[in-house]
Length: 291
Image 1 (cartoon, rainbow, N blue to C red):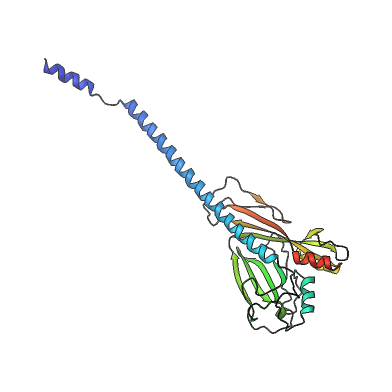
Image 2: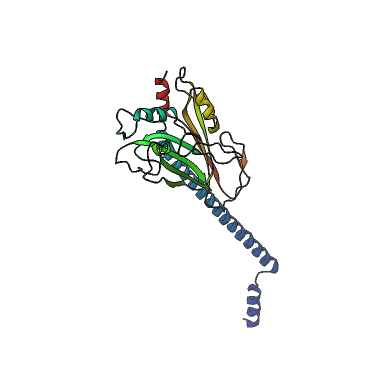
C-alpha cells in the first residue's frame, strides 16, 4: 500500500472545528453561563426576602403576644383574692384605677406630663396604663415584698426605632408614697417603624353593656371621662421592618395604620403591619357592674 496515500487520508480525517462552529459553541456557552448566573442571583434575592419576611413575622408574633398578655390586665383591681399592699387606702385606689385604666397627661401629681398621647404628623403614639400587679412591665417590684401587688403604671413608647416600656409605682406618681426604687426602662423590640393606638369607649356607664360604641384617640379620653364613658377595649397597630437593607422590593408600598394617613415606604426593606383589638375584660365587668 502507498504510505503517502495513507498519510494524506489521515490528515484529511483530523480536521478541527471551523471558525463558525467555534463561535456558535462560545455563544452557547455564554448563554448557559448567563442563565446559571441569573438563577443564582434570583435565588439569592429570594433567599434574602424569605429571611426578611421570616424575621419580621417572628418579631411580630413575639411582640403581639407579649403586649396582649400585659394589656389584658389593664384596669384590673382585685380586692377579694389579691394580696394587695395595704399601706394606702386600697378602696380609693381601686376606684381610681378602674375609673382611669388609661392615663392621660395631668392624671399624676408627681408627673403631670406622663400620659397617653396622640402625636401629630404620623409620629408614634404613647400609651400609659394603670393596673394592679406584683411587678411592672420591666419586672421591677419597686421595693414591695414578693407576691404583694400594688398600683402599677406602665408607659409604652418608641425611641428611634425601639419600642420601650418604663414601669412606675402609681402610688409614687399620685403623691401617696415616697419613691424608694427608681423606675426602669427596657427595650421590648427594635426595628419599629410605627406604633399607633386607639381606645374603644363605652356608652355612658348608666346605660352601657360594656361594649365599645366608638374608637377614639388618646387626646379625646379626657372629654369622654366627663361624660362618664369608659375605655373598654384597646386597639393598637405596629409596623415592623426587616433588618436587612439588601431586600429590593419591585414597588414602594403604602401602609396606613389605624387613623393615620397612608405612608409610602422605601423598597430596601420588607415591611409588615400587625394590629389587634383587645377587649379589656376587667373594664367590661366594671362597667356592667356600675349600672
